[in-house]
Image (cartoon, rainbow over all chains, first blue to last red; front, side, top):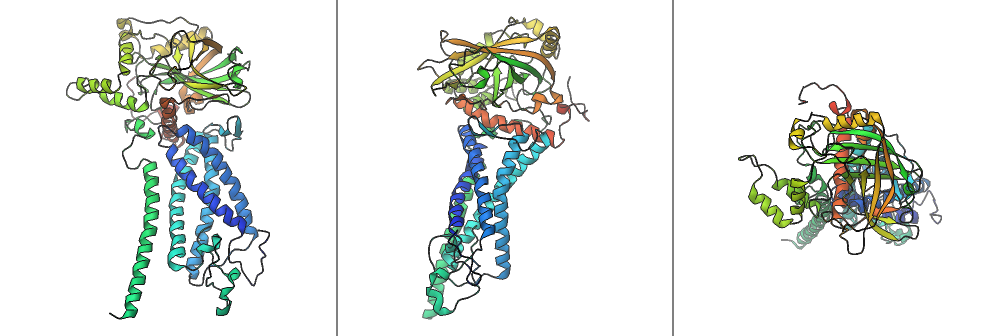
Length: 211
Length: 366
């Protein structure tokens, strides 16, 4: 991220390294987390084991998303490709902020649910997070339902996000997907470069629907 | 066809293939999610265990062992378990306990003479903040080796509509699949029914692992062994007993003074069936009195306290961990659904009787 110089005239072609690492790390963590979460609500055998994974993993996601948000707000990000309309671009940006919101809200509601239910929030045996809500049936019910509804919604949002990202990567090939990867694909961006400059791949731009 | 349009066509075709590919990836993930959530596939999930809860089940009550009473008490450790586990409860002088005595019937309005199963649930909170939750029954062992067996047992013993009694062929088929359940059937037919919560021994049934300061593991089961003598009753006494006989008896006894149970740990030896709750361990296994539970008073569960506590036996403190007992693991999810179902009803104000609010319809058969 330190390498990323935010020169206004030349927006970055890629998300900064911190963003890219966090994106893929958290993508794998979150996808794991969702399956752990839904699995522990059904499994006859693995619930205790999955719960022991769910809480520390959720805590890690909460910590990482804070770093990620700080990073996101501190550095400029690639612009959308020229082919993406203004409306689509705004919608994508809105969805991305919603995804960030989910990453924050899900660990918090999980934590709040356990707190309101009077459970220990066990990171490892003997190490527990403090409760963030008093024990209360209404708060438990609310947090329990919020956690569930948001988790299912989040999963569907991730599926949408993934589909859109793959569409950009494989069909539009507009560089949007590569802005979150380490490839140096040439793209057309909204503040277009002169045709001759396209070989300068450091100047490729794409925002992408991925975080 | 012109060459140009053919190329366009092929390009489109490839796009179509890619789009189908992406749709397949997404659909696979969605299906994997739906399967994991138990939405299809028909596998037995922890939710399956609560599917028999009728729609008319009174809101806010526990789905199993619905009729109960909260207790408060103190656990005083003897120190004898300290060499086996670093759990703070085994060393601490006075550990506050919140618990619950309950009747085995799912019906929260069941008469006390309707079941032989009585339970004690408890949560010990040590001064290091660690909680030890347990749910103990007066049965000495579980009927089947696994949780699926419990479902099959329920299914097999359901009275048929034609005769009003279980279908002998289905019972026989169940016992063939779960021969260990025969032992339970015999116990159920012969063992005396307890006439008091106070004189009953409550057994953990599942196995756990104690962890000592060096990380050494010791498989263990435990029981709450009463100081009060066991009392039973004749069939006629039982049939004539009042609707709330056991609970009234408990209250009366506690008016005179506290009731006590010793927490007795039974240590497994190599080869003992740790992962099978239907098998008891040999009689000569070493036993340790880890401490004594004093139950000082009881109060109505409508007042809260134990009402909203999930006595999930897998929530153990540091120094105790779970064994590979499959019934123990299954209880975690089942208890969780029962807990969130009823606490949601209470939280959203749907519960009436369970929280002591007057009921509109007089469906109580008291």
